[in-house]
Length: 131
Ligand SMILES: [Zn+2]
Image 1 (cartoon, rainbow, N blue to C red):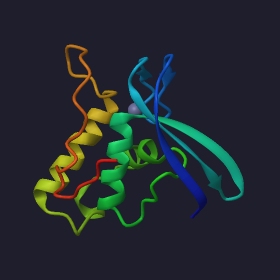
Image 2 (image 1 turned 90 degrees about the vertical axis):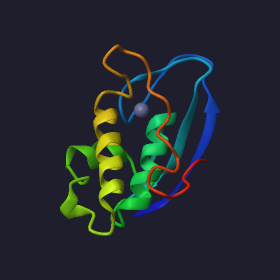
Image 3 (image 1 turned 120 degrees about the vertical axis):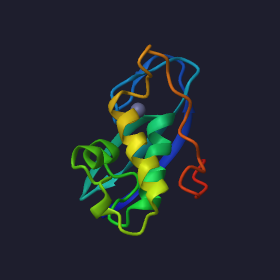
């Protein structure tokens, strides 16, 4: 359990690296800076707008996920927690939406021609998660 964590939306003035998907956050993009304490250690983590929204979806969908915990979305995808058996409370459409977001996360939110995808729909799981 996180002792505390707060996330703030910040407009990038210079390039930053998203510490969830490791893509470059370009100047003028909004990113999200989380500062907090995890098991006694202070941390800050930067996330792009896509990953921030993805984390909110995960947080809604998975009771075992704690939004804002260090390395959250990456570890969640790596462990395959989006698979059906791990999320019994979701409908098929919600699972599919999460699965697609996990795939897009792995592709650093770019399509096959390299264009940045739009932000994940905030209502895709039927839950409003927009900041
Ligand atoms: Zn990201």
